[in-house]
Length: 79
Image 1 (cartoon, rainbow, N blue to C red):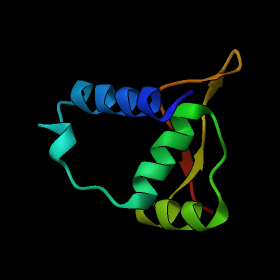
Image 2 (image 1 turned 90 degrees about the vertical axis):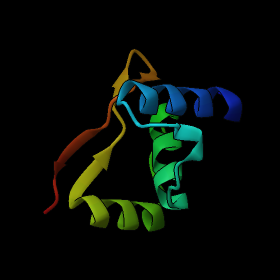
Image 3 (image 1 turned 180 degrees about the horizontal axis):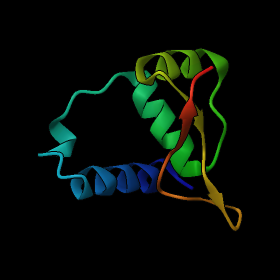
Image 4 (image 1 turned 60 degrees about the horizontal axis):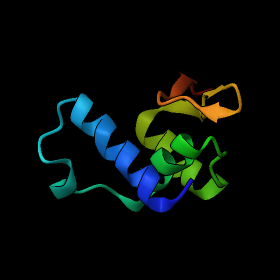
């Protein structure tokens, strides 16, 4: 997937979640990295996982379906 495809998918998700003007929102780089990795079906690097998991108090795992990432995060309570 290209950056443009991933970013368009992220904007579409934000719009579906009724986030107003998604392109004008402010997000941390860790959150953007986590969402792009999730959309691409990739694992997060430990340093990003530590920040995102800590902020959400959950464990992160990309959801995969037939080799492609699902457009929903799967979370489990952090240990």
